[in-house]
Length: 224
Image (cartoon, rainbow, N blue to C red):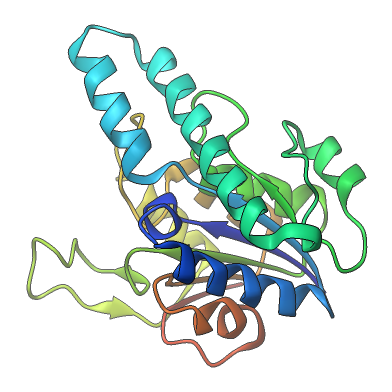
């Protein structure tokens, strides 16, 4: 199978070296039987720099560019952890990502263009490579009816259609460094391509496998 992962930067960048190596080992193991692409987010580093730039009066596109650079730093960390199991070049385009792909080797990339989160990049990459599945590993264990950090009555949604995801995501604010299970652009791409998608808790390394092969407890996005 062709699997595309969107890995939240807050998950990877917040890891110590041992935990980061465990993520890399999980991806390496999956790459023995599947073609793996991993798109890495900017996480805390991106948000800190974006907030400072915004406070200094920088326009949103400039903040986006700062975030993209942070994703490339986090991508480089994952490449270092994967070693020979990864392409040593971080691609800057979807076509380049495909050129770098080969059996047993993980392709790692970060942000591509202003106005796009790495979830959107992962969705576009999944569409470009005709992926069998997109796995979004984030800081929450799926999509909720409300923000679980603010609303104690929020309930996790076990499964939903592509259209339902798109409608829910449309309520998300599009802003550099925005925190949300998935952004509107990514949701629309997933909907238009009907990409089978899992949204799982990224801090559980087992979910890298379960999100692709089944058994996860997150949210499954399916055709209506």
